[in-house]
Length: 372
Image (cartoon, rainbow, N blue to C red; front, side):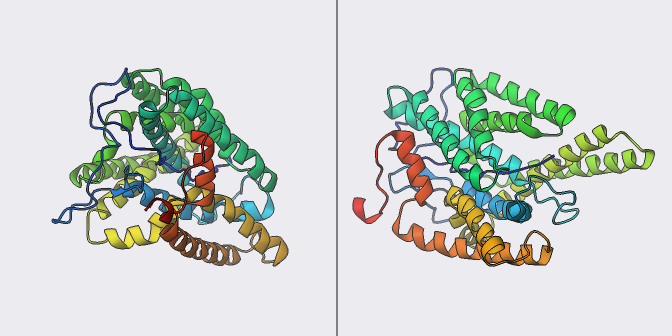
């Protein structure tokens, strides 16, 4: 089954919302938009402030940048050849298609953060969300002309059909739907759109329960959760090996494999969150945050660069794993450099800026100097 992934900008940079303004179906909780200090004197990582005054959760940028690197490794041969699936995973036993659940979760998180912001500044906040999803659909349709297997259109459609209606639900119902959809997707489909929908809802529920703003403040929580995921992963792999030994049906093997992938995602995510609470934080932020902050721009331009390298320069990316990895490394390095330099002068990436323009229906500032 083909797996594709979406870089998602999960921090809409709208004007700062009022902390005391809540959605009617949620209990009072700390607002994701409440300004925080960038760092305390004791070295406790907090959030980097948006130039508009909104806090930016740096951990989400790092997670997104990390997943973006995995996605290019997984998809580079598909982009070069125009295919939607490969028979053999490009990196063997280490599954690089882990970006799908990570970005699906981040998409739901970003959607809920935008709803919170829009509720404080727009008379019809759900119209803001609809414009955002509509713009994403338009971007995806254009991108599909270059790579038919792209995922933006599916994210937009699932967002319109699932995420938007879920904003009328209480948060406990949203969490319950996520808890039902994710196992059902693993059992009956091995993933797919049902899994995307479940992870969308899970990400939104995490925001509405106030858990996302805690990820920069806790070490014990991600550590314990990561150990639980690791134990579940070991059990899933043991069950999978036992099934293979007795010749179990392919359906059961697929479901177990998808569960193992999802648990592995949990291990990676929790591991990164723990590492961000260590002296490695500056290095991780330096490497992954610029890519993550401009993830949509980098996702789209990667397709252009891969096609140019394959069809214009004639690199055998679709036939040679060595060529594919070298091309991926070169592209990621170039994108990191461009993102780092761009963000020194501008608030966000060029595609993210256009997406924000369509979302809020007015032209937002781009240059940092213009509002200084």
